[in-house]
Length: 260
Image (cartoon, rainbow, N blue to C red; front, side, top):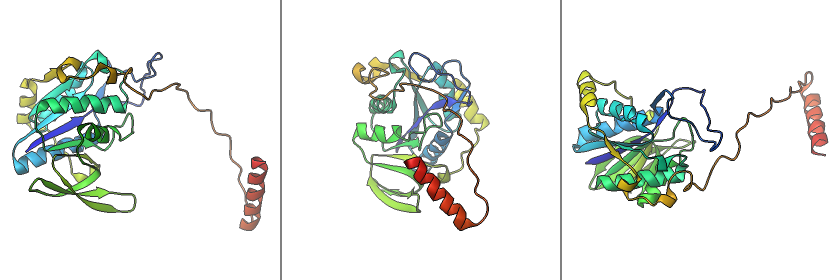
């Protein structure tokens, strides 16, 4: 079984800096970590490899420093690592990111399952995983909390919903986005750390993944941030004491006055 895990390196701080010209995050030189939800994707990818055989390949798109995240993934049990890094990717929105990663995955060859964390802690859109599946024209299951079974090129998974869960069956290849309830990520072993230190990280640029330059980076992103600002402080609210019915009446009159 060939498993691909897509991860993202995110700032390890809430004190992020914004490029004033592009209104995008400045990632170079910022202390970073693997996106927390992607740690569960790595663990599930390694567990599937241990269960069914094959290999687990980890991919990330980012600046050269993202190589550190890939080495950490190898230390946790992944086999191969690919860094997709090019100035042409700078400023990518979720659509451009999904397109870029999908092209990189195509170049890896045949795959059975792609696993992503449900969302990234810096963007919180939960759009890249589904975007990759759309670009590759494969089925997807989001918010997966448990893989029930895999057999005969079919996968059955338990998907979290706001009301409970759903059991969904799909054909392979497919893409899954996973939630933290799916597993407990392991710690890297000494053997894994030694392997990661010596591992060769494959690096691809835009030309290597046969990408259309018009769909990359800021220029290929149909969405962008037009303005960043701190919202004004909220005014102090009113407190209504006393009889609940009287308080309700006062609230109704107050709302009517504000609407008028």
